[in-house]
Length: 190
Image (tube, rainbow, N blue to C red; front, side):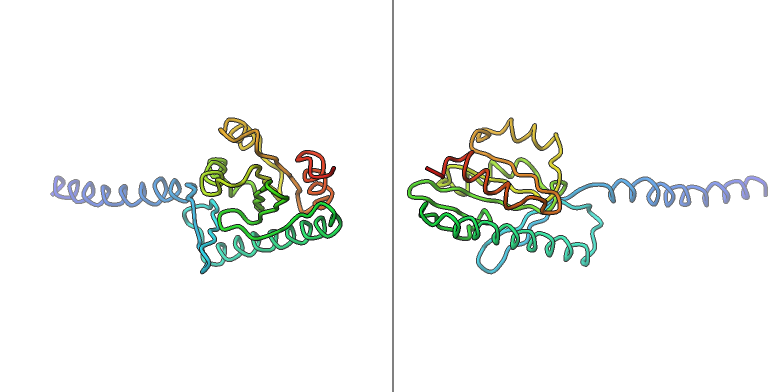
């Protein structure tokens, strides 16, 4: 009977151990993994972001709203810059693969706005240039501090010389930063 009890005890411990390993180790590991999400609009515009694999629908909604709100804020400042500098003959339009396109004659500048650097992959920058081969410069505007890892990845990118970064945590000095980059760094003012 002792052998039977021992076998029964061991037989019940093994499934309990398997359940414990799954719950504690595997589930925790999967919850910390980040996945790339992509949402396409009717006109083909794609919104990409990174989030944990266990993200809920309400969290996705918050991320999308945050991205859209920041894009709206950036557009407001770009429009103000263009209106304030009419003599430069700048045009603003929406891009399919980047958020905005600013043109001045033959010069085409892609502008991508991201509400959080933690939800961005630097490798996407290469995609912007592949998908938008007509752009000569890319301005990446981020509504947070840009981590050094992303800066290092961007510097290692083939198109690094064509990229300007704007970090504007909580929109602080956003118009001034956009104005400086468009006016000075890209030489739009004559």
